[in-house]
Length: 217
Ligand SMILES: *Cc1c(COP(=O)(O)O)cnc(C)c1O
Image (cartoon, rainbow, N blue to C red; front, side):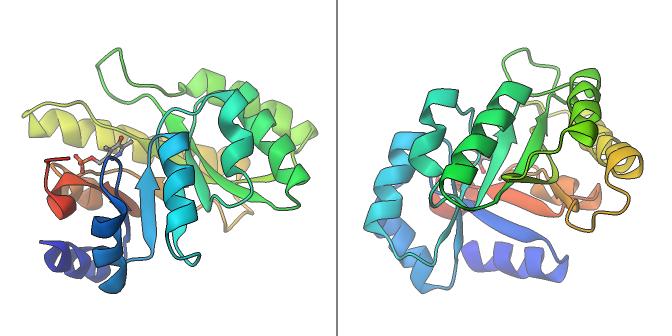
């Protein structure tokens, strides 16, 4: 299954994030040996332990809700934080990045699902933040695009509509805030059950766990 997904994402020029949350180091190593270098985790403590145990050329993406007081543990090594869901969090990431003498690439997470539980910004929050950043830019973070999760539903039309809404958000932000920034280019959407729909709607980055590793943990 892994190789099929690699072939599919390569064909569509989409970056594959192998979501390794709850999976042991041995299983990650197997995938590493097959060439996978980008992995996603949703918990800070687990991410730090895996970073320490595994080869240092792995690019680790944090994809889950991040508490401000935990940013310092991952700032020195994280390759991307995909789940920026508040201005306060972005400011803390900036501060910790500067301490680590690096620039941390981030994505703005948007709430596109109908479910209440999923974290994320809405358009007015994002614009409020970006209007302030226009005047007072942060030097420790680089906003590379947007991220979102569709509803957990069998209604594929609804899922596609939600992905389309994230693509529309990206296009609008690109036009209003990032038209001169080629680095604002990523739309992270699509998981095991819906990555083909996400790619059809313009995803540049898919986050796939169970379809690669199996659903048992
Ligand atoms: C777990 C998780 C994924 C991967 O989900 P699968 O259905 O196992 O592919 C993707 N994105 C986020 C934010 C996740 O928490």
